[in-house]
Image (tube, rainbow, N blue to C red; front, side, top):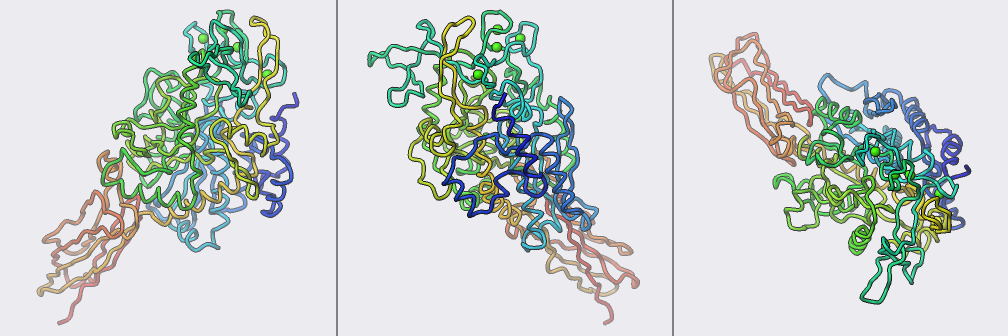
Length: 624
Ligand SMILES: [Ca+2]
Ligand SMILES: [Ca+2]
Ligand SMILES: [Ca+2]
Ligand SMILES: [Ca+2]
């Protein structure tokens, strides 16, 4: 087969995989723009890395930045691939206490491969900025960025290299969708021999609900009987009835959607949510990591949910201002491309016409349950999806229970249960013309077709053409190539990464911190001293979100007076503070100690995994 997938390995090899890991990253800025104007871009998966390519690229980054970038296995996928965790931070300076951290997780949904490339790009940009950009350098000296570039290596591999090529979101765990005792026995097939299993349009008056749109015949729309329109087609995935049960593609290889397997609002009746929360080894490994690392302040996930583009809703009131500010910052550093509201409504309408169920394809304007309760307030909430982009492409409908929700999503879990800032970014919410080209004019499906025609030279959409189906007779086969509507052409990844790196730097500058000020001892005579100090959070974010306090997952700030050799008469040696709010939240402390002549000073320490550790030496004044 000379399909698009032959390009994956070839391009990965051509890029050398060291330093620059995708095709676009090697083209100088000016050249890139010229090229964009001059010739069409190759759509996904051209220039995207498979598991071996990504592993090599990560290895290359670690080798290029020893002591700063480390790549360790987080766990193993179901099929035995390493799920990589990258740690970025100066090892040599790493003290005994955990260093406050940010955790970035990408490519949980198999078909959101762009996430793994942006995650890799952020690792590279952080490492390259170290020693050049003072803010980044300072951060990497005292903090850590954890990055899981591809939580779902099995699913991504299926999408990138599986045959026939088809849309793929989950992790290949065996699931018997139609409960016939066999798993994965009837998936999409390539009936016309082009290597792709796309969409199939079938003329069948009994089941048809759709007609070709007179304005754009490449698109189908619902027939309107009131306008005298008779439906002509139904549409489903390309394929045949492999197991002879009378249904076509009723039990495709799919598995569990790794962005639906998290314990928050987990859906027990949805096969793609898994048999239990965290049933999947990839999700389980990350949850174990998270609870073993209370220093994580924020989880930023790249996927189909997007909660950073609209004002927060559904969060604890005390946390909302912080999240609103992050939203503002995000929109300042990665300006949203206004996704028209009409798109979501239109696609929902289309979903109703789909003839048969298929694996999970949730739409992209998910609302958390909390958000739903806020009466449609366009929100982000904990992993909510206000201001969301047009829905994911699919010739098949979503599972009814999960569509339009964030049930079981990582971002939701990160905030609601792990109790940290939970951010989610779609990265490429809608197709755009390359810089320097006229902007795309249309919306919704028409916009995708315009992008297909003008930007990628028509190579993302396969025009429907007649094919012989073994049981249905003549059918039409064609549609969007797998993954092309979720992952931008490779040259677009660099600029997307730049914008998200700008936000990451903002976020790094907003970590909670600790400071001890006005620490002093006053002699009261007879070896008695009054000690006073203020412990403050000069960072932007609180040392614990209200949600972190509520869930007891965020450790308190511990304030310890080491009164070694002295007797504490009043005040506690160890004080716990649930949280110090951001931008100057503080507590005042007072102790009375009786110190022998030999004790010259006392040590005060304030520490929190999420804010670091500070110490102050408090001399005891003697001699009058
Ligand atoms: Ca089955
Ligand atoms: Ca085909
Ligand atoms: Ca079948
Ligand atoms: Ca089949």
